[in-house]
Length: 511
Ligand code: B12
Ligand code: SF4
Image (cartoon, rainbow, N blue to C red; front, side):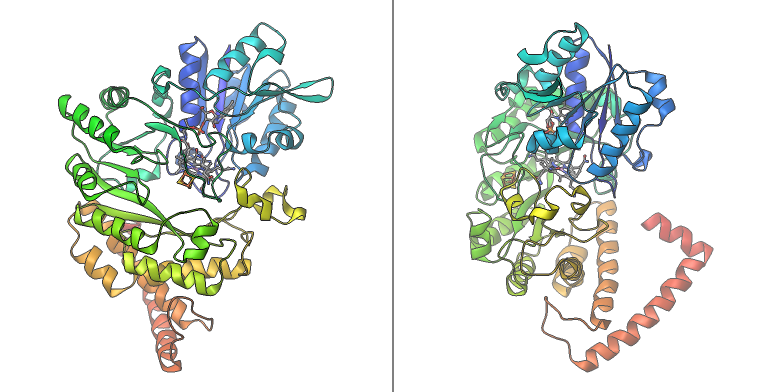
């Protein structure tokens, strides 16, 4: 049997990283003897297109599986409809985070789906394919929804996979045809994306935990290093990005990982996500010594009441100390910041901005929180748009207005996120700490310098506008007058710069 797995993009922008979910499924299916191919709609090369009819005809799959996310869902639903019209013989399976968060609704939204797998799919998909192949009753397959005489039937849930070392390594050979933009920020040539664990025990209210709940399972350090060694060898990767939601959860595990890397003589640059409160200076120094060069932490909100409401139990002091320790250990830092929390007002958003500035991380993107299905804050989405997936296209750079669950109107949320970033990156403190004194590769340094320049121009643009300012006190009319003039001059220069061929080439190389 031939199985084709499609990863849905977010509908507006390229995915930064490979689709680990379907790569895991592909590996299990291949191990079970099936012929598999994947298509990542979000990969740069595919420009958000779905596979053409010819593409499908060439592989001629018996089953097509879709990994569904909330963003970009309407386009996928339309594609599945057309696919079933053109190839009625193909069995369609849907799964992933959106499908697991709202399974019944997804079966209604996608009447062409024959099956839905909820939760982890690695074992379920093998059992289901065997059932389809031998035309058996699917009622005995745990973890699925199927159709029976017009009814939607749910089977018993499947327990989480306890021993992750039993899973094959993701089928990375299937993404050799793609490149991913995350490589742009890296110091190496080719970045291996990897998860050393699944799940997270915390319960932040904006997080969709439908697939993993509060389970937390870790692979053995040996199994992880085996994957790294094998993938470096086969495909020439030379850097690793750990995607674990909580890479720093257990210190002894990390020290074991470092020991395993040392024993095998493996040294390479890597990055990961941590959580405030799970690291100390010794651990961060050991991470740095063992190749880590950037660590990300959620800052998320600068106001204690807002943070309590989103279930993030930490103080501003904890956040500052963690970032200070990481910097002292020689790491670059990345802070996830969000606005549009339920209790957010202009004042609490200003608290977030102020905390970002105090912490002064190397990277500090500001996202507009999206109340996704599967997360506790989904309950605050107004009834009339709860299932209107076209409205869930926000977050930050995406088209359309975000769904506001705070007292701040949607159009102001976008404006504020933009303004916070512009003002954050164009500060003198940012320039002196990160642009002038950063010891890093030329590639990253060039990127940071570009970011700084870009945001400096954005700052001037904001100052020239007649709108309120969340990030600083209202500028005087003289400052605003100067900014307006300066902005006009810059616009003329940028226009000239871009129109000259020699500068156009330089500009496209830099960006
Ligand atoms: C790493 C990560 C990323 C990476 C890589 C994503 C990727 N495509 O693999 C990056 C940074 C690129 C990313 C981007 C985005 N992400 Co993300 N991401 C994660 C994170 C932290 C881990 C995902 C992961 O790799 N897990 C490991 C793999 C093995 O597990 P998995 O993907 O869950 O797959 C298993 C099951 O879900 C199931 N399954 C998955 N697909 C399919 C398909 C079929 C047919 C079947 C049967 C089963 C099945 O089986 C898999 C194996 O067991 C999760 C958080 C979380 N709670 O999981 C968020 C999460 C998945 N991301 C989320 C979102 C919103 C996004 C973005 C839309 C954000 C954005 N603004 O762009 C994009 C969309 C990416 C895309 N379309 O691929 C949401 C999804 C919520 C939703 N309802 O859609 C999550 C849950 C976080 C959250 N906010 O709550 N993400
Ligand atoms: S946001 Fe991160 S820390 Fe919070 S529950 Fe989700 S994965 Fe865990």
